[in-house]
Length: 153
Image 1: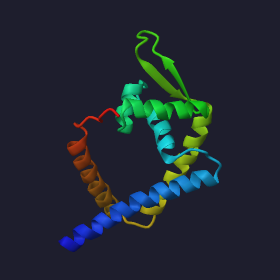
Image 2: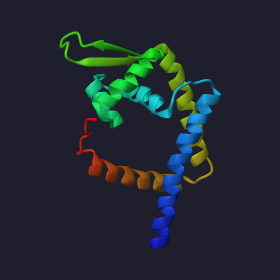
Image 3: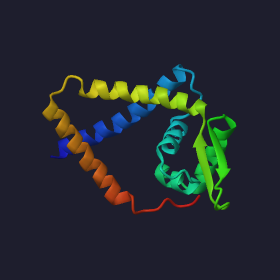
Image 4: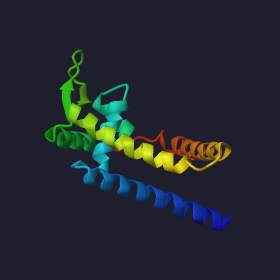
């Protein structure tokens, strides 16, 4: 059992590191001058039902001040636009630009290729087991960490 735990830990850590490294390298080779953190911030904004800075910070699991700094950089580079809520001027909102959509398209292509390679040669029941296992792991992370708030810097 200890060998299994050790091997699984090594696999998860290595996969995480490889995905981030290769993903960023792939985007750099395609002319994207952003870090993976910046790309994932764009992705969070694009997918968010609530585009307030507070909500985006929560989704990105960063403090509001960290997100503000990240958004300032993305705004200078032309990937996001920040604006005040029309009804409540205390609320800051953010949206992505057309330039960001181009980056997200490349990002999505990378993920599509990665997933296709992952499930390409496996049987349906093996894919279902993989999904169930990953859902269990994600469930653990959500149960353990979603209730904890990100501390301010």
